[in-house]
Image 1: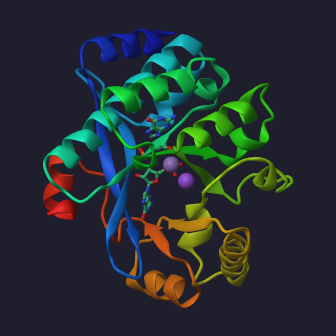
Image 2: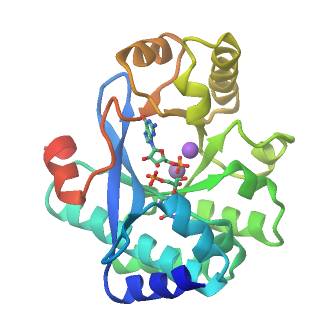
Length: 253
Ligand code: G
Ligand code: G
Ligand code: MN
Ligand code: NA
């Protein structure tokens, strides 16, 4: 496929870059983490959304793994650079594709990158979607346990959108539930969504998992989440994804 060829070139020719979006502790307003979001600026096509090119990369196992490895490496390089510059520690939260979890090099690659950048493992978080965690890919559970043992944090992305059982929550060592933005957005106007968000917050409390609400765009939502015991949030209200330089200026200084 055309786009696959272009993506391979993109990696080699440095058309890919990373943006960072703050994840905030509501009680203090502190930025504790940054979600890493991949950006592609193609010389002719302009910027292409990861919603479009990640699925294309995923069709070619080794291409997705090359891109994923690059994102992990650059994310840890950035976290190291921020530590070296004297900013307070900010955890990087990296999206991981099913294809990466299926491959047998993820755990070694993570260990290698943490080591090379002398990054404390708890400064790296991996976001795995609920559907990936439930997919029961051979060996995936063991890989997640290895990552957790290493000290890396595991966050369940898009939480609430997978339909089936929650049993993986007791079988896998996850640290955080990330409430999907579709529930958060119209929480004020849709009592069913509010009920789901509240149920997730309470479930997190009783299972001892951090809960972060994604897609928070208004101060009204912030108030609601605080009043209902949600401790962390991410969304345009706090900041959109921006370059590392902008992130430093806006959120770390
Ligand atoms: O920020 P944005 O709209 O561009 O992100 C769109 C989607 O692309 C999100 O679902 C996000 O998880 C995914 N995405 C962004 N960066 C990465 C990445 O580095 N790896 C993977 N696997 N997905 C990513
Ligand atoms: O699927 P994942 O959670 O990784 O995707 C993150 C996506 O959500 C990114 O595309 C990011 O740009 C987007 N996003 C983050 N905060 C908000 C928000 O407050 N509103 C909307 N509409 N999108 C958001
Ligand atoms: Mn994510
Ligand atoms: Na999400």
